[in-house]
Image 1: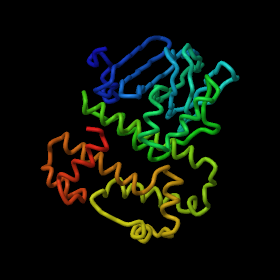
Image 2: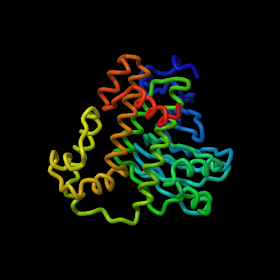
Image 3: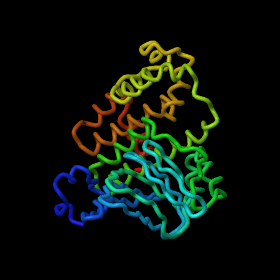
Amino acid sequence: MDPESLQSELHNLLIPEAGIYFRHDDEWDILSQHIRLPVFSLWVNDIFSKKDIVLRPFTPVPIYALHFMFEDSLQAQLRQDPGYLLEESECNLFNLPPGLHKIPMPNSKKILSLHINIDPAAIPALIQQEPILQFLEGSKNARIGGPVNVYPYQVNRTCDFLIQQILTCDYTGENARKFLYRCCLNLLLNIAQQQHANSQRLLYSTVMHGAIYHQLFQYLETHLHKQHSNTELAYIFDIPAEQLAYGFQQLFATTVEDFTHMVKMMFIYNRIQAKALPHTLIAEITGYSSVLGMMRCVEDYYLL
């Protein structure tokens, strides 16, 4: 579809690399965007119903679908069960067989969802690259047509950060595919960490310092040029040093080090693509002693 034919208010929702399907009639408005990536197939759906309708998404081949729900909730009707609630701010990993699926959508309902389809044949290579994804191998034995997870995963702040990066990605071609692939992989890694920690109770100290941890998250997101140890961060944010690393990982399903590295890699990638700063200055800002060392890191991260 030609983006120019869309209503002007929808233009800021478009991802330049995505294929677009748009429909506007008496029953519903739907803007569906699709990006094919190595291993993954990325979909973003923005739907508003004007009548009671039934969504019938079609799966042509067996897939795993990592489904993130943002606006409102829907009750999916699965083949073997009475249904499954797709709740706002939650994520589920579905093992889907080929065929049509059924999701009733009441009148005047507005939803926004993102899902990443994963080719089952690619799972062994993904596990070899990232061993924490081993839980996907076990999901092959999960019931077909339903969620693999026992309890929904959370769209935590790390997930929200990554999804915003996807929705605002203005790259095209290979630059877009490499950036978006890494965002999808990082989302899958975050869910894997949630799966790994699903038997651990949220510590009282983590809950008690929850607001401060969110301040720390924002600080790390916006101060990537500063190098701090966890001990220094604990002092700055008045969190017990022995609790900081574990509490951060409990809330955001990533370590301080991994999140800091992710933000730094995104900053470098974006500045290199923009060609707005000399590579020497980018290396200096991000704490690298040489341009060569910086480039090796970002190339490994984005598989350049």
